[in-house]
Structure formats: structure tokens, C-alpha cells
Amino acid sequence: MRRKHNPELTNLARSLRKNMTKEERHLWYDYLRQYPVRFVRQKVIDSYIVDFYCHDARLIVELDGSQHYIDEGIENDEDRTAILQKRNLLVVRIDNLSVNTNFDGVCEYIDKIVKERLSPHLD
Image 1 (tube, one colour):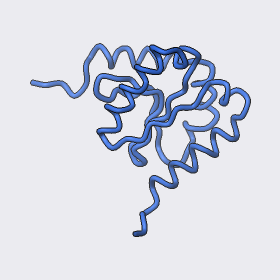
Image 2: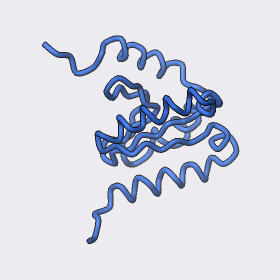
Image 3: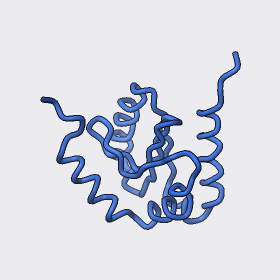
Image 4: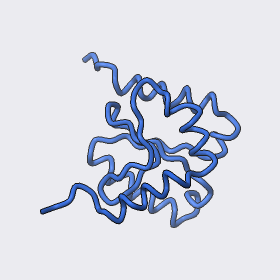
């Protein structure tokens, strides 16, 4: 019988939820946890654990620290994003500095994207 999730990743995701970064805690507790459209944190998708996921909007929000801006981090993020996009998911990357210095702007940006993804498209 095939499992829905890799049990090792499920346990790791649980651990990551308990040990969120300062920026992840800020975004979760001060915005996403009470957001009217449900977000979950540290969600296992394929062979990845994404920071925040909104199923209704098919949206992944990733908070990026400095390791994401070195060559290896950039390549890994590009590969990961390409795989997730094949599932019709939008991956939005927000740097930790923005969470720390422009929190209201970050929240407005996420809200705008969710609303755009949920609104019916007029052709």
C-alpha cells in the first residue's frame, strides 16, 4: 500500500512547525493563522516541505533566509519551484528582511495574490 506522504517528511514537518524561525512565527501568528482563507504551515507536498500552503488558492508562500541567495540555494529553489508549478501551484518567495521591515506590505501582497487566485477569471 502506497502512503500519501513520506513518514520521514511528515515527522520532519511536525518538528519544523514546533521550531519555526522568528519570521515564520511572526507571519503565522500575526497574520496567516487568522486569515479568512485557510493556510497550513510546514506542508508536505511531493518530496518537499513548504513553509505555508493555501489549498484553495493553490498558493505556496516560502520565507527565504540568506541561504537561498547563494548559488546552490538559488539552483535548489529553481528546481523545487519547477516541480511544484507542475502541480499548478504558485510559489511566492518572500525574503526574511521584508517580513522584518515591511510586515504590512508582505501581508497586503499575500492578500492580493490570494484574492487574485480565488477570483473567477473573465475572458
